[in-house]
Image (tube, rainbow, N blue to C red; front, side, top):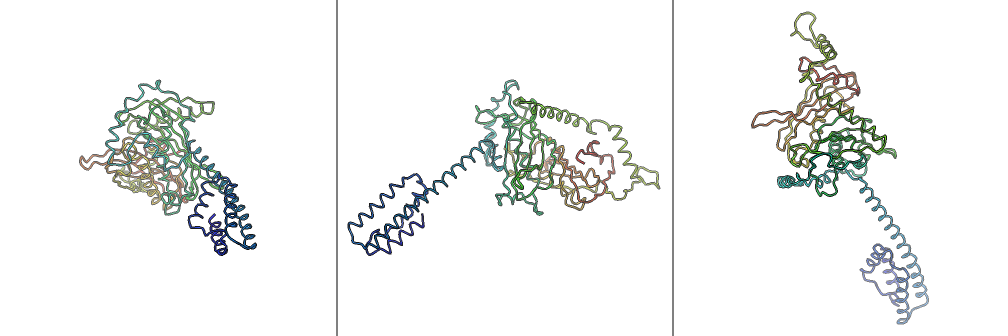
Length: 502
């Protein structure tokens, strides 16, 4: 339509002697453009009729040659056809955009959104403040929500698995600015950032399961208790392809929730699976001081019955592992034999002494396979409950574990699995977070790293364990065997020596 206005101005300049069409001021082309773009339903015959009236009036009040009149009529017909086509295209485009927006809104309505909106949605559910200066007032307001907590699980309605199903997209392929946040210097995706997104999504899935439409804010404080496992189904995450996270609640206790999530990446026209993750969440009161009840789950069909049974089996396995620590019970017969065999391989055959230890060939003492780090916990890394975000802790622990595996194996290790990330205590804002990574087992091309996280109080000089992480990496080459030198250097239990992912 800008070209139509330009043509009208050119015609008025050519026929200035008879002034069939008076010179148009600059606002007229803009007005015509406005009609074509914002008023596509304006009747076309009305516009054509007005133009003809203008021509007839000019014909009566001025003399004009037949050639000029013929040219004017030809322009009128051209204007009508061009303007009709412009309006048709504008209408088509307007309907197309409206349909696209409508579908997009419907997609968002069906729990599809961007990762960047997940934490904002969590703040809305909890009523948390986005400003650190207002966090105390926001937490004080949450105390009044305690009266909304259920007194027993029977008081809460049952939920289905599909009630908590969510899909969240990470548009790495379509948003280059977002991609910069996830890139490594090797032009791969930072897996620590993925851990942060998984943690946020697990919390939102849990809130979707406990959603009460009658309440503006949820009285529950849902936090991560354990990352049961993360299995990598594809070791390469492409930095220029969109990622989709999906998941739902798979098992529920009285105060705990198990959420399973899947990550896939759009490549070659389809979403291909990348990883499967299982998180265990716990519900607390608004002040995050005591446990709170969550909605029971009701399976719908044999498939969900099977998923629920797997959740029960996972719970039993977690209970068994929690009671099998060497800090609580003695090693089993198999473990004692393995520990003794490792000890004999390090004895000096020339002397008969427990203190005479030698390092076997192609081996590294476990005490020499350590790497440490320190983080000051600033408010920027807080969660919606004004403690340090669990995803941030996982990211820092993973990056330290990766760096240790890289320096130990002299390679760029690939993540195989994440096991047993245990959140024992919350980390407060302003804490000194001390991370210690240790290569605890190696086999062929695999490296297992244990990262211990503790908070140090500089005033009381006390150390308190907050988290324990286990990461399994693979190398492109054979790695040296790691050998414990003391009993304390032995792994906690035999399952760590023979991980199921190897």
